[in-house]
Amino acid sequence: MHKLLVLYPEPVDRVAFEEHYRAVHLPLCEKLPGVREISFTLSVDPGPAPAPYFAVFEATFDSADDLGAALASPEGEAVQADVPNYATNGAVVMTFATEQLVRV
Image (tube, rainbow, N blue to C red; front, side, top):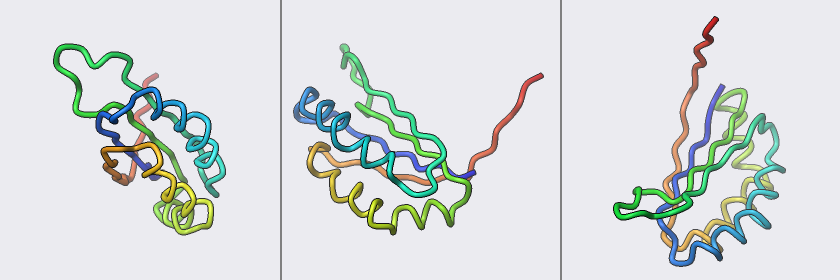
């Protein structure tokens, strides 16, 4: 398995970020060819000492080749082109080979 991880710093406008992210960006992500699983987390409250990231996105693919093909596809290009529309402070993108531990 291979994972795409995207970390989003605190945006200028949390409400605008979340509205666009849910209504536009995530539906684009769901169209990525070969994606097996998508999950995300949005910070609820910055608190007295805010975390370095407001949102975290994860997408799982069968292999690095599948992930690369998805990002190079027209759907992947649309996902990447949409990021500046809501991520006012950019995004950190990483990819990882993943392993799962199973407890019995």
